[in-house]
Image (spheres, rainbow, N blue to C red):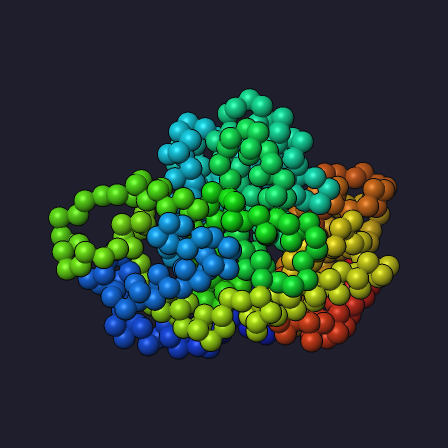
Length: 409
């Protein structure tokens, strides 16, 4: 296990890897002494109760009405499975209709649609890397779209689709809306979102379904996802008979509202315990950590925009992910320099990420020589609250890595 990057350290500012909270690790380890199974109450009595409470707190965070008249939801073993369940229900409600998502949505939606036998359509993005509403509406007129996925926090750039405007289109065309908040869902608690992103998050209660990954910003071990449906009546699609599982209790079994069977009850114990220590409330300690990550990304963006060595995108980060290009005559040269900076930064114990993104996200005329459609960018996920305090040290290493890369093309 020494052959890993220092994921928990603030100088690891590459991919979206955030260490679980110590209390989550401790609760998970303690629960594993029992090894509960949250499929049926027979296998996980206490952990099932904890799951119901933890999920209710997530639903409250999103503003969903509480049960029994409100939402239906449960934990899953990953965000992929959570999205699978949401699109499975969507396909049953809108049979034969296609799923549409932005070209920057997570690739899991394409895969899941294929697994479910649903047509999938990728919608172009606008110059903010959000779903292009004009292109979407043109397609909606065909009445072939049954579900639109709104990504609140794309994994490449942290872009937030305009959910509030998608709801206006929904009234006109009657499709379902699924919110993929696997990465960015918790930012509904952040205090420093821009106005457009704030409107999108405030619209979540009106969506048909929403997914969030507690194993990302929720400080949980892998794997822990969560799916919520606004209409509890979709539980009818899960209904099944079992000759042996449900005899010892007449109460709700999580297995009756989940596609998965055996699931680690320890995940629910860890999440429940963490939410006791760090409640999902605006202005609380947990929420302040999210705001600090966004503040770090905004500060990093300002430094990039002021540096002659880099090219900043036309729009500031919407969440805690910042990306930028290396200054060079052409996209190919910029891409090669970005790769060199990435390599040199790692030698200084600064771990960044790379992402190939459309050149349309950068100012017009940035590249005069042979501008292609994409460029390899440097990318940083500043999701640890400590990143804000470490920003000077991150920047010093980035500048040093850039100087070395430019001296040795």
